[in-house]
Image (cartoon, rainbow, N blue to C red; front, side, top):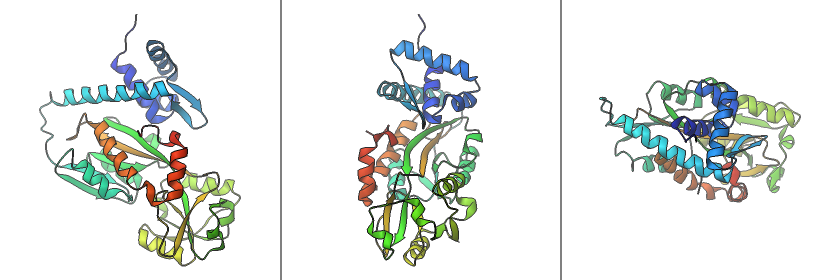
Length: 316
């Protein structure tokens, strides 16, 4: 009778992280049939299906989430055990890198519960954060999916999806569309858009595709990565995509987009040779707590969040 092995647990974890057996196989250096065979073995051993195949990829079932939680704990504990056998002293500062986020201070405070000395670096580009992570310049990172991410070598890094976040839209409070609770993206085809600088738009392809599906090419008039400047431009008559927990006020309103045409995956990553080696589940818990702290800034997003648990399956 076969038994569960660490490679089986790694397979389950990687499929969940990648959302695809094909991408998971590439990351693990396996063929797709070989990884599928491992998944079938695990499903036989635990007595049920671990993933549903949906248009959004492989989504853990209820059983899958339970197995995945145990797999991560076991693999984290194994990483911690292995780290204690190495000569390198990993005590010292915990370097944290992230893109600009609304819950930055809360996340830093949470990480201090794991390491008293946390030093944070904020960069405008998710690709830049991953560069720092791969180079060992940061130990823990939070970033969004970006074009080319799947080509990155994330060996030695525990990667977990925090949430799949829908984009909202920011409008001037004087815009006639501000009276609507929900806005069709096509209604914004004639507006001037504010976006980050072109090189800092991580999912640029996805953004243009969403607009193309709505029948237009966005008129990218202004580029700034500074939030207060962007809000000022919107208050003056422009529009922009907005992070879901963004708050209405100061001359702008935040509205949901009909059909949620633009969804972004947000990830938490922990290096396995870091001061928090073997504690990736605790790092994730810190990020989850920090994210929860901003949910009520946008009541519309809070309602959407409560109605769509599939967007945050690992939150409890």
